[in-house]
Image 1: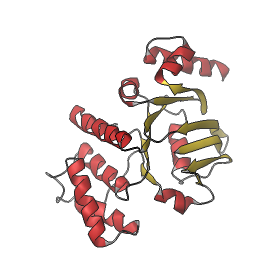
Image 2: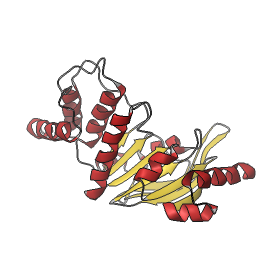
Image 3: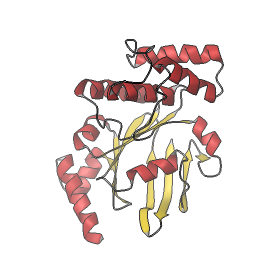
Image 4: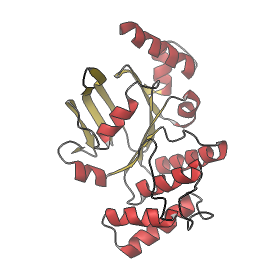
Length: 243
């Protein structure tokens, strides 16, 4: 489970996030929805311990990410926006190397890499050097690295950016499998169709603050709209009016 309570973060005079509060539960997919520049990536970076909040706290399975970042990372698999992979290693070697970083033995890392290669349908490129990979192949490799230690919680920052239709469908199937296995999945997006197709819960963020949260039906009801896109536009417009 992922918990955010009153998260705030400034960069100089810019207040990137302000009093952001929400939960992402186990066995559910939660979407962090907002326009570009809304504060989604900053919120996720605090959660996966890259940034420290100026105020508030975040917990991964009850572990404070600011006070115990290494322990929090053991419970977390993160796919940052634009995550790079080592171009001179094969996809398999990238995965096994991250397994070693997480303290896995070489046989265990190899076994887990093979499981992920099959799960993510990576067999056709698993033993090729990563230089020259397509965007979809890079994403699958980076995602496999994030999952190598079988974390309970998974964070993804706009994971479908630049992917073709087949790669998006493959990613969608994987996230659904993670939910079925009881994992907590949190991903950011500004694409309403993506959120509507995948998410059990949604957190709408605008101008660095949460303007709505709950199930899709609850968020639509709050905005007084039947369509998620129309609800999103109305909620974002209300936030802009407060600025």
